[in-house]
Amino acid sequence: MLRLQVDGAAVQCAWYPFPPPSDADGELGPAGHRGTQPAPASLLFLHEGLGSLTQWQGFPAEVCRRSGRSGWAWARAGHGRSQPLPRPRDETFLHREATRTVPELVARLGLDRPVLVGHSDGASIALIAAANAPGAYRSLVLMAPHVFLEPCTREGIAAVGRRYRDGELGRRLARHHDDADRLFWSWHDVWLSPAFAGWDLTGLLAAIDVPVLLVQGHDDEYGTMAQLDAIEAAVCGPVERLELEGCGHSPHLEAREATSAAIVAFLERHG
Image 1 (cartoon, rainbow, N blue to C red):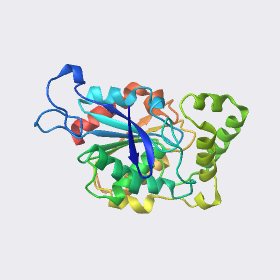
Image 2 (image 1 turned 60 degrees about the vertical axis):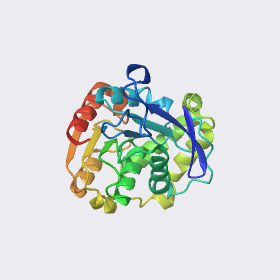
Image 3 (image 1 turned 30 degrees about the vertical axis):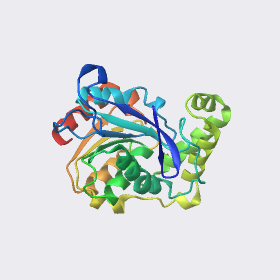
Image 4 (image 1 turned 45 degrees about the horizontal axis):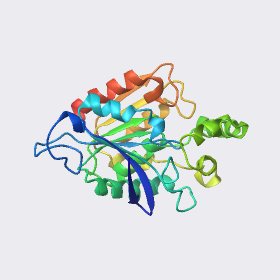
């Protein structure tokens, strides 16, 4: 694990080299590849609203291994073992992560037009980042993305808030986060705040002209296929979709093989 100072906070980062250090000779470059041969674009994994490095459950390493690419993931400020949130979270937090933290992290890691692989809030951050910096990212992989609020989104967040008060969810999150209570309520309260009621990214999407893979479960409690429809209708680059029956909000965990295979195939065509 590596800790980097990014946008005013020390954040925890993980590197997934390919090939692994024991499998090849040569010096590592700043983006994690070897020698002077051109390498495919690195992957940068962006976790969900309550996510951390450990909650990926090895998915980034699996995708890197199967695709033959190096990759990075990080725990945003306030998540996992990263430094606590340096400022109160408000309705602009996704935009700040996308327009300040992500570009600064990419620069610090020496990545050249990485592929952004985002889940949930991480997928929304990836969309904002790509819309605000055309040409900076090679392609986007978006699992359970949201670009506007649906009734089920707020209902799902309110329901998980009730579960958190019951105690078990808090105990589970505490295994992954230094301050699970602060993280949870900062996320919950912002998404349900009046200021967030009109949150909508669809006006940004026309600026995205890179290939996009959309992955969505039909049983996602936080969003429907309307999210994918809105993205596909608005972006200018080619779009591929993977719709998963019997899958909820975490395709990379609930339909791991299908999701991993789809990402690898997409990267072979567009990565």
